[in-house]
Image 1 (tube, rainbow, N blue to C red):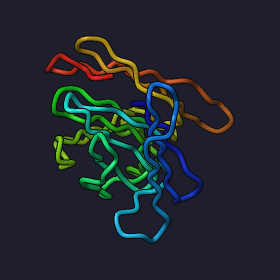
Image 2 (image 1 turned 180 degrees about the horizontal axis):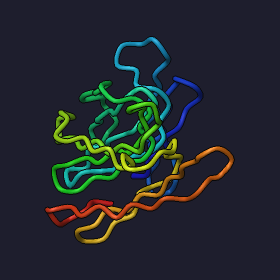
Image 3 (image 1 turned 180 degrees about the vertical axis):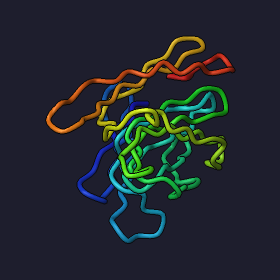
Length: 169
């Protein structure tokens, strides 16, 4: 199946399509609704077919048919997501020591936070991740973002070594 995720503001919408692009299911959450996690910005799948969706207000896990399993709202503004083995890697930005910083949050398959890394901690710039999907090979996860100092902007690409092989696209 194909999942298309998005939304407007804090409203989440996912449409699940079959191989003929016929709609199989539609999932919608409005702001303020229990288990709302903001508009969807990315989706990845584990080896069992569960979908993990990054949203403006957190990360959600769904069954392959679209039933909500769990939501973690501990980290907001996560916009990129990738699944590898039993881990979910989500990228976003967060204010740390006076600057917006690139952050990687690693979740287990139940959406418990396993690790949090500040990726841009050694710069005196505000850093942001925007839409897009991380790329990967067997043991490395790549994510692109940008940072700024005054009117100067630059693209930043991270190559993060991951101990366990077997990314799931």
